[in-house]
Image 1 (tube, rainbow, N blue to C red):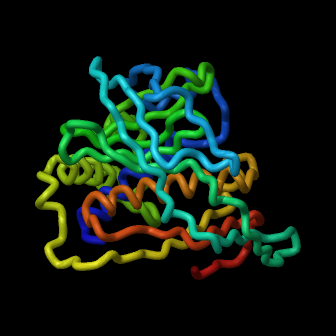
Image 2 (image 1 turned 30 degrees about the vertical axis):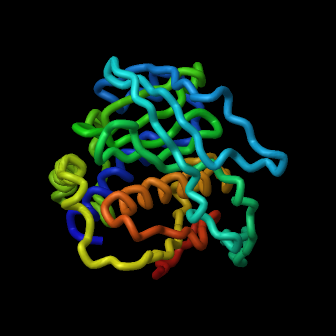
Length: 272
């Protein structure tokens, strides 16, 4: 990734990780890191979404989502390249033995798309348990997620309205606050540029980037030691990263090949 794109992705993921979790908390806790937010009820176009006989969600879906008093039509396409058939999950037993598994992930609910009549817009979200993800509109970027206390209602908030200052990507350092602010600035700057300027001139064929996800024991514990919940969170974030890359490099796609979660605590330093 180029420098600006790295900052964009880091800032975006830090904001989303700050707000994500498996707490099923009340509205006050769910919004405690937001300086401003709004409530909306997304409306699926064409009726309620239904899976096919194999349990697979629809390849395409559209919703009407109200943001800042305006209705936006969002068109979504299921990201079928995100998880390959041989996707592998690694975890550890209590004695430290490596456990390898192939979880059923082909019927995932992760989508990408755009906002109708809004040039340069991009959307990445999961849609099976409410809408959860990000929307990059013409002048701002928004997060959306179901309200825990009333799942038919959804929180919509500007990403810049996430009030806490998370650490920058990598190890913390003295300039972490400035780095986070810089990441937010870069995110806005990149998404406000004309779409044509964001494309690379020399990409004549489709490129695929393999992604290997690793989650530490702290995050695993934070997610109530639920491997499935941790995996879903990481794949959700991978879909958002892929959306950013697809938006800036139209012939580049991420493929998430494996997922490793440290289900036990290691006393020694590990090099990945």
